[in-house]
Each structure stands twice: as C-alpha cells, then as structure tokens.
Image (tube, rainbow, N blue to C red):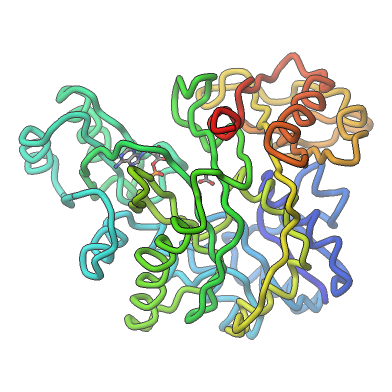
Amino acid sequence: MNVLLIGGGGREHALAWKLRQSPLLERLYCAPGNAGIAEAAECVALNADNHGEVALFCKDKDIGLVVIGPEAPLVGGLTDDLEAAGIKVFGPSRAAAALEGSKGFTKDLCAAYGIPTAVYHRFAEAGPAKAYARGQALPIVIKADGLAAGKGVTIATTLEEAEAAIDACFSGAFGAAGARVVIEEFLDGEEASFFALVDGVTALPLATAQDHKRAFDGDKGPNTGGMGAYSPAPVMTPELCARVMDEIVWPTVAAMAERETPFKGVLYAGLMIKDGAPKLIEYNVRFGDPEAQVLMMRLKSDLLPALVAVADGKLGRLALDWYDDAALCIVMAAQGYPGAYAKGTEIKGLDKASADPAVQVFHAGTKRDGAHVLADGGRVLGVTARGKDIREAQSRAYAAANKIDWPGGFFRRDIGWRAVARG
Ligand code: AMP
Ligand code: GLY
C-alpha cells in the first residue's frame, strides 16, 4: 500500500519511522516532511490547505491511506474532502475534529453526557466574561475557543491577568479562535496524556504517556507544545486507565456517534489526575507531540493495519502488542522557544547521537542544506531512547542528547523526573 502522511514535525517523523517498518507498506510520501522524515519517506511539497491538490496527488500516486498528523488540516475538513473523492483517511471529519477545534463544544459535550471536567462558562463578549471571572476563585483559566497553536490558554493568578487574557482574546490576539472564550476552574493535580484509537464505534486504548509542558527544568517557565515525554506513565495504573475509558472515552465515542458525527482517528485526552480520579482538561484529535515519539518506540505491532482498521471502521477485536521497555523523549528546541527564536543554526553530531541502537533521533523542525542539517523550527529534535525502565531510557536519551553539537539549542535536564521519583 502507498501511504501519504501529512505533517512535518517530530510526531510525523515517529509515525513515518514506524510505518516504514510495515511489510504492507510500498511507497511512503510525506507532505511537507523534514530532513529526518526524508530518510523514511519521499517528502513532497503539497499544500495541505488545498484539498483538491492533495486529492489529485493521491489519485496520481495510488495512495491507499492518508494519515493526517496535525490538528489544523483535520479541523479544516481535509478528511471530509478526501473521503468524498474516494480516498481512505486516518483522521476525523471536520465535525468530529470539533473536539479539539472548539473547547466550548467539548465542554458542552462533557456537560451533556456527565463527563468529568472543570466547571466552566462560555462567553461571546468581554463584559460578561470579566463579570464572571470577578466572582470566581483564583487561579482561573481563560481559553480561546478555537485553535491557537497552543497559545490560547492563560492560567491567571490575579484578576488583572484574567481581564488582560479576556481582552486579548476578544481583541483578536488569536484571530477567529478567540471570538469565543471558555472560562473554567483551575484543576490541581498531575497531568497525563491518554490515547485511544477510535473507529466511530469501538475504542482501543494505547500505551500511557506523560508530557512536560513547561519550557524549563522543574516545570517552570512558559507553556510549550511539549518539551519531553515518556511511556509508560506510572500515574496511569490499570484501574485509572479503566476509569478513563468508562467515564471519559466511551461516553465521548457514544455521544459523537449519537450526534451522527462519529469520531474516527486517535482521540487524545489531556487529563488531570487528583486523588486517583481523572478529569478531562481537553481533547486533541491527533497523536501528541512528543508523546507519539515514545509510543511509536514502544509499539511492537505493525501500525499500518491498525490505522487502516480505524479508517475502515473495523477496529473490532484488533489488539496491539507493546514492548515492555519504557521510552523517553527529550525535545531539543531553538534558544528562545516558545518565544522568538532563530532559524538556520547548524546541528552537528546527529550520527554520533543515534549510534546506540536503543536511540532514535526524531526530527521536528529541521531542513537539509547540502551536507548540513539546519534548525528550522521552535522544537527541532526529539532524542528518544528505549530502556528496561524509565531511568535507563532517560540515561540513554541524555547520553545521546549530550552528543549533539548544537549551540543554538537547549533542552530540559529533568525529563522523566516524576516517574523516576516514584521509583
Ligand atoms: P490545553 O491547551 O487546554 O491543553 O491547555 C494547555 C495547558 O494548560 C494544559 O496542558 C494544562 O497544563 C493547563 N490547563 C488547561 N486547563 C487547565 C485547568 N482547567 N486547570 C489547570 N491547568 C489547566
Ligand atoms: N504534547 C502536547 C500536544 O501534542 O498537544
């Protein structure tokens, strides 16, 4: 089967690396890809916003499955238009992608179906939003309703901050995404990422993972797309996973089917765990980045038939095997990220870093310039290692990261600290 993968980040490199190992795979294309993905796939310059162009490419290259990595093309309806052209797609429809595309939609769904989440209110104007915020306990969480590239959430510790965040949303700081706002209660606890493949009716949980959202050691500094991840996440006991399926995932799958907008793809529940009970912080409708990197390192089964089964609505009794090994990914980012950063700085030592067979260096934002690899984004590399436990995966990943010679970059030194502290 020929496959087209949409995206060009670390998540897509991990997916490409795993798909490449499938005996069912013939040609793998990736649009746009990056310097690392180019080693596993043929990178093509398709405009994912031009659905007709993507469909023509698929017909021309006899693509049997399109795998859509990022949320924006999903929320933009790429799945719908490709399916209408008779092309098989892994990834939800535009209507089902509202689970990520509109935080208010998801909150209303939670309210209607009794799914545990933070108490909230939705607003379309600044005045009532501020009046509501004034009556709430601090900290309080202000969220732009739509996609805001991970920047639309403010955890306000003062009323002034809350009001400034409300003003920022309504004055267009996030474009149309901020025209509506969700204000919700601050949830205390430990965050975890939970993934399930969903074929419209059936859901299959994947291995557990934890991300590190803050830029700096000790979970300090600004929120980012994710600075490192590991799997499994010890906080996610089998009992807790069962509760997440029963209280959060299954009701969501049933609700989406009942509304005739069935969800097909990978459902990513961002959770807050407190006293052994899960609450939904938000849904994403795609794999996590960098969680995909650690999941793909641990997945023993062939990924391709699983993605096809989802697209075909035939997840049925499909089971996936996982390596018992743990995996840990350290994100190397350009200096300045998540604020302004420079592009084009040279990265050396990649071969030395990936000499250990237990290590994969996934590229997130790189491009090739002759013999040189240059940084080309905020998050640039995901140095990922397997080990018998988190501690071993961590020491291998750090040994590899330390071999990378990139003065333009930085990384956290404490990825995995919660899991290691648990012993
Ligand atoms: P989101 O884009 O909704 O995942 O929010 C980004 C990050 O903000 C989450 O990963 C959490 O760390 C934090 N966050 C969002 N909502 C809440 C909440 N209600 N309580 C505490 N932290 C939150
Ligand atoms: N790792 C967080 C995300 O993918 O949204």
